[in-house]
Image 1: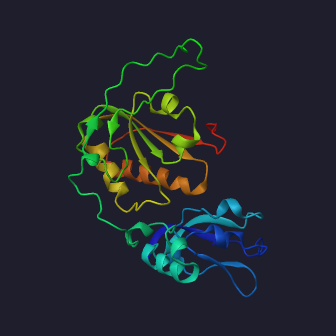
Image 2: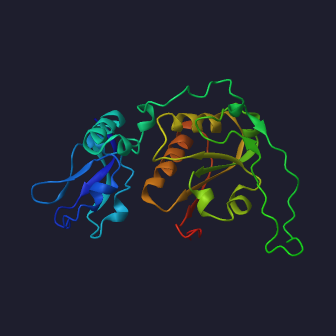
Image 3: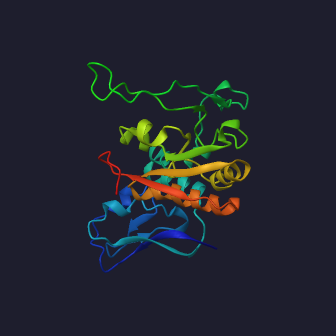
Length: 257
């Protein structure tokens, strides 16, 4: 048993619509014989709250309590049996159990080699005849995915660091100009990635380098808050006193106040 976040259902509010049972990729929620939502098994619930947004009567909430830990393998097998193989691929942590053709990226793959990308200074003045000026990339290093970056990569030392949920760059049109400029970048998805090593890895990046500032960018959807939790745990584990700036982006592409 561990102390962790998990879904709690208010039976008095639940109207039996069943929307939460389909919204949960892990198949953790089902309707019982009284047509009320219940947890099929606590080990199927990852606690990220993807079901919260669909409940029309606010009968669901994430609480912290003692429970058996989330079991990605059990959830994967459960969804595979009840919904099929395609649905099972959407389970949080399923990538470890999916048979993929070919070989995984080898450690020596050039695509994982740490390298800086030199950029010319950006002119914010719009070019003649171009509304808003030329849109240019502000990416200054590679790789950027959290599984692939190395805590020892030289570009992390003495930098301003942005840790962004995958979807943010596609939602915020000015992501490069407003958030990324002048920063090194790490991207991750708390819903679809295997996040078991993320806290320790971010902690090592913070511990081993001089980080001037740390910004996290997440979406307004509940499951994205998992990345915020991971980063805060990593800061604590690192033993360093570093302030965290949190930016939340709405689905309409606006930064939430």
